[in-house]
Image (tube, rainbow, N blue to C red; front, side, top):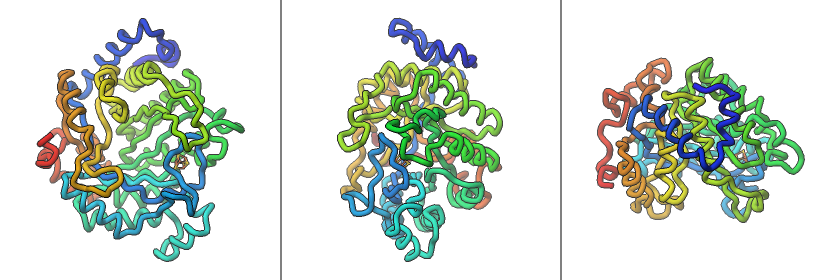
Length: 380
Ligand code: SF4
């Protein structure tokens, strides 16, 4: 693994050196899981779009009353999970705003109607129903959590996540990306990640690039993730996500990071984290760049949904899969399905609540990969 100083130099690699940097990262990746690249067949569950934060780049959050402001009812979530299950999905990815009850009376009333005081309590109850009434395994991604929250959610989810995004406190300053986001104080996020490690929770985290951080701060963020993983061994996946400018967000005029920035960061992440950490970049760019992303050292494409994004036409597959499979195989890799809990963690009993172990084990082969990919997925 490379030093912090070397990483700082490499993350500014000029265009002429990019291919060599990526080749080096690719070699390190191949020493880990070899030529197997994975994805998870998931259903995206936007449990609530309300959030007490206002991140400058967020396309997800809504205020009460705005179009798209929604908190899903338990029955809606179960119906979504069952529909996904029929199409072969195995993961219910719960995404939600951070502690909306701290800001919105409407949300407090919603929670009261459901016998809950907190969104995290509501999330736990809904995850329990998904486990009981669908074949899906929850992965919870609910923002900051205390040790108690983590312990409670661990009983009803096979893995959890919290994007560290950045360790830069500068981005909390007026006019910066996290100016109005109290839950994005880096020390608070690091605390949740640390507690998850203490509880041996398989954890997904990552960085968001292009939101005003410097290249050195990207390295600092990767170093913080590496340190956490060295202490606890619980980081199952590191996502390198690139900021995208959208018309309705405060940062709509902020420049997007270039593809070269993304590739440099992916490659440096691989070189800093070594062969065994799973690295993912969301494949929601043009298919033409899949080979470049693979070439920079990733080994996972993240969650792919068999349902349409608007959930209106559940029989129509997400069109990206055939392209993804072709692009992956064309580079000499094998595409395999994994669960929300990555193979190496699924094989370690201490990483899973006892009650969930038989259900996970029944789905896996000897390598911890999904043994019987649904007919729907095999067709692609
Ligand atoms: S914490 Fe920030 S990024 Fe997450 S939902 Fe809230 S506003 Fe959006």
